[in-house]
Length: 294
Ligand SMILES: Nc1ncnc2c1ncn2[C@@H]1O[C@H](COP(=O)(O)OP(=O)(O)O)[C@@H](O)[C@H]1O
Ligand SMILES: Nc1ccn([C@@H]2O[C@H](COP(=O)(O)OP(=O)(O)O)[C@@H](O)[C@H]2O)c(=O)n1
Image (cartoon, rainbow, N blue to C red; front, side):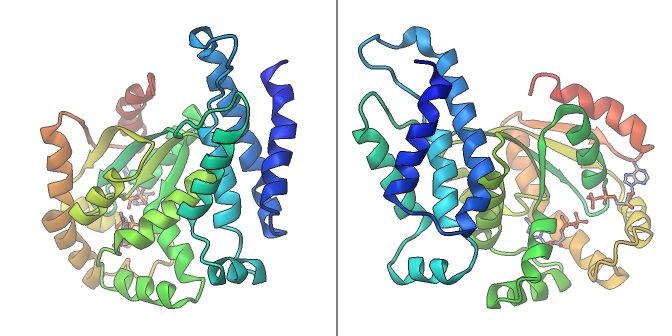
C-alpha cells in the first residue's frame, strides 16, 4: 500500500481518539503537510526497513497533531483543556503512546531545521529574511513580530510583553519560545529563519533544551550603530519602540546581552558574518550563497 493511502485512516484514528475542537480544524492543513513530510521521510528511508515491520516516521505528524490539540484557540474547549490539566506535553505524550501501539508504526522525533538571524536593531534582518523567503521558500519567524502580535491579545502576559518592549528589555524565553514553537508547528514546514532570537543567554539556553531542533548556523548582520539608528528613525512602521530613547536602550541590551550569544556560537564555528552596511542588494548577494545547501 502506498504511504499516502495509509495517511487518511491514520489521521482519522488520531482525531477520533481525541475529538478536536472546532478551532482545531483550522490546523488541519498544517497537520496534513506534516503528515506528508513524514511519509516522504519514511519513503526516503525505506531501504533500511524490514519487510515485516514497516516503520513510518511519524514525528512531524505527531507534532502537528499535538499543535492541533494543545494550541486550539482560546475558546471554551481550551478552558476545558486547562481545567482537565491538558498541556502540550501531555498531548504529545498521548500521541506518542498511541502511535507506538499502532501496528507497524513507530514514534520518531520531529526535526525542524533552523538558522538564527541576528544583528543589531535596524541592521537589516527583516529586509534580508524577506528576500530569502522569496528565493528559498523558507519560513521567516520574527520573534519581535510574534511578541508584538501577542501584545494585541490583551492578556496579562501580553501587557507584560508590551511594557518590556517599551523599555527595550528581553522578554523571558517561556513566552517567546512558546510563540515560536506554535508558529513552527502551525506552518506545516520544516525550515525556518528565526529572526531576533536568541537575544540573551537565557533565550539561548532554553531553546537549546528543546527536542528535535537542528540549529544549522547563525547569520549575523554587522552594521555601525550610527547607521542602524538612522535607519530605524526612518523605518516608519509605527513601532512604539522606534524612538531615540528606546533605540539607545536597545543598542545597550544588544551589546551587553545579545553579542555574548553571537560570540558563543562563534566559538563553535557556527557564525556567518555579513557586512550589512551596504545597499540591500549587495548584502543579499552575499547572504543568499549561505542558503544554497540549507
Ligand atoms: N542594506 C540596507 N541599506 C539601507 N537601508 C536598509 C538596509 N537594510 C534595511 N534597510 C532599511 O532599514 C530599516 C531597518 O531594516 P530592518 O530590516 O527592519 O532591520 P531589523 O529587522 O534588523 O531591525 C528598514 O526601514 C529597512 O527598509
Ligand atoms: N527574542 C526577542 C526578540 C525581541 N524582543 C523584544 O522585541 C523588541 C523588538 O525586537 P525586534 O527584533 O522586532 O526589533 P529590532 O530591535 O531588531 O529592530 C526588542 O527590543 C525586545 O524588547 C524580545 O524581548 N526577545
